[in-house]
Image 1 (cartoon, protein in one colour):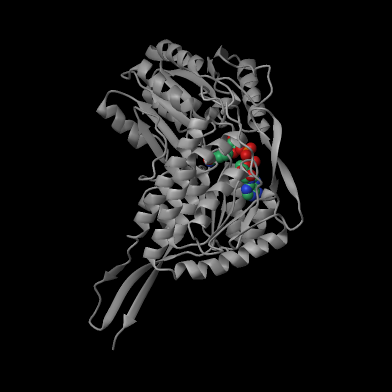
Image 2 (cartoon, helix red, strand yellow; image 1 turned 120 degrees about the vertical axis):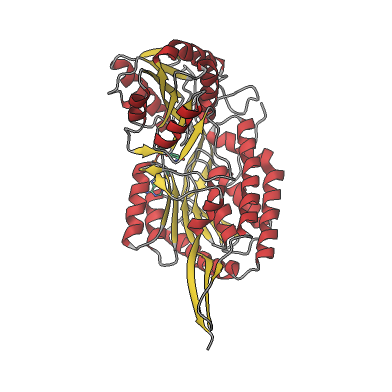
Length: 480
Ligand code: NAD
């Protein structure tokens, strides 16, 4: 196991790295050891005002920078992310816990996401519309302006970069408040942009008391768009705040993804693929499969294969190269895993594997498979965001669809079937923004991701990603 020193984390405002104006900071904890490994500076109101001034100024510079020049800077940033991916991965593992291979892979993929958005932004064309003689009628697509972005801790580099890359490619500036729990990874990402030659003020990084920072940035007239990834309750709060000042929002919120394993599916193959996705990042993924509805004819085969896959997961410190699942990222997720498991068991569920926190330091919780989970168990209504897999049988596909669609969320959904007709039915009837048939693959930058219902609105990835960061302006020009 390699030990990486934890860097000194600073705010990045107007192209400069600096401490908090008040010197205030909060500890950063390694979730694999529960040891304090560093500190995160907490921005003051004056720091936030500096960031707003910088973002305002940065926007004026950046929107006037020729696309070819913007593109060259952003491609350099992508190259730096690729070059620094191993170091970014090591730091991410220290503060978030995921296996170092997974962390490095996240950094490498995020560089590709940036490249994809940059290329797409080169083709953010407007259009010219046939009009009466003497009139030019056209549509321009312009960057919306300075963006206030708020991102969580589960994808410490991929999460911030989905917002930064699309916004900057579109010509916006940004103040991003990354998670106080994974600040060094966000700072390492922002350093790649800064070192690539981004003009001062285009990208500003702050940390602080989340509610105070978001309230201040959202209320400021400088901010033109609010982009948030996180929980449904916080998303509702920020959308309401933005509503009072009529600001558009991009909301990437939680879900509670159903997996329907149909009568004509291969249960062993389905279990293998679903289990791989379930235990990725210890289940702390907004699209993590989290409610398993299995046709009664496959219930035992699916469960046995899923339990086998769960027991093959190697739980440990993510810095150890043999680990395939690290600890939970914070004590809140550990407490939630314990609470949801205990509640399900109290109501009659059976623990088929896992279920108990190991006797060691760190926020570890084992891959856990629960069967006979009654409908009123909290875990069937509340997103676990932990390595918990509740499995429940069904007889009739329409009943399974009704259960799958019964929650107020609609982010990801999964179906396993060998029938094209059943696949078409699942595709049409599952209420989700992201649907995968016969696999549980993750997000790709070429295609849009986002939710329906309380899982939010707006899309990240795909050509749709730029839509949030661009405004449409109609220009009619009378020539005579
Ligand atoms: P939380 O609701 O306390 O916070 C979620 C994120 O929002 C954190 O990064 C936090 O710093 C930030 N936040 C909280 N209040 C804020 C505010 N007023 N203004 C701006 N940012 C604010 O939840 P948590 O304990 O960090 O995570 C638990 C739940 O959050 C999970 O169960 C999951 O549903 C959800 N979550 C979703 C995603 C996602 O990718 N959609 C990511 C992380 C967490």
